[in-house]
Every structure is written in structure tokens, then in C-alpha cells.
Image (cartoon, rainbow, N blue to C red):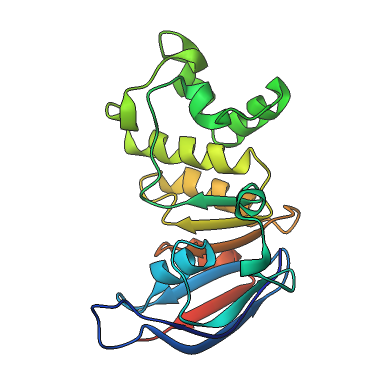
Length: 212
């Protein structure tokens, strides 16, 4: 998916100053993009605008040269993988938390589990991948929660990945390996990420710098 924003304008009703005024950018299909900037510059908000969480005041956002507003939302969201801190695990098995009711082959599931090195963790659970989690994954290590949420989005082979600090709690050695996978040009998806970890920037093809 390619993206183009033309003269975006957005501000919250209770704030005098707009966060974005006449803001434009272009991202080619298969681009690997890091949004950077100081705290309060609108990094998370920009991800949310691209995801359609907020409605623009003015301007236009195009996906594959078609205005965002022209898309059927349900069909579009099947092509987008979103990893925001608000994402949650639910009370169901590990497998159900990853597949989310989609038809996923055993081979595809095994591939993703191996990429994220979740197999060893599952092997130590009472029912393996069919062990039921507490709502929100309350008793799980935070690194495992983040890996499960990433497994959930990449197993659907999305065309666009929107992510905010998706590997914050994962160990550095594993973090780099997962970043290498996600940011590999061979992956057919476009990636837009907000994260402080500098290795994302090393692997990206483009940076969008925001200022207050």
C-alpha cells in the first residue's frame, strides 16, 4: 500500500493549537517508515489518523491513490495490521488470540511461532498453544504479550503495518531479529512505526520527522 497525505489539518476541540496544519508526506508501497520527533509532536496521533481512528478537519489521505474516505472500512481493515499499546489479549487460547477466527493453516501458524520464538514458551504451558489465557494476559510476561500481538497482526499478511513501540519489552537480541524480519524489503507490506529504539531507524527506508 502506498500512502500520500496532502495538507492534513487536525486538532482536538479542547486545544487551541492544531497539532497538524497543512501537513503532507508521501510513502511508497513497501516503504519501511519511522515517524520520529519529540514528545508531544503528534507521532501517535499521526498513526491514529492513518488508521482512521480520528477524522481529519481538512486535507486528504490517499491509500494506493484512492481517498481513504472512499474505502469500505471493513475491507480496508482486513489489509491493515495495527499494533498499538491499547491492543488486548482476550480470555481464550494462545492459538485463538493469534488467529482471531481467521482460517490459518498449521504451517503458517508454525512459521510465525518460529519467527517469534514462542514455541519454547508454549511447550511449558499445561495445554501448549491451546492453553487458555486470562483476560488481558494478566499473568503473562510483557515480552510474551507483545510477541503474541505481533503474531496476531503479521499472520494475516497485511498490506500495511501501523505500530507503536511493539517490542518495548522484548530482549535486545530478539528485538533486532524480529525487526530484521518486519523491515525486510522482501516482505510485501508497508510499515509505519513509532518507536524510540534506534535499530528501527537503521532498518527503515524513510523517516518522517515531526516538530511541535
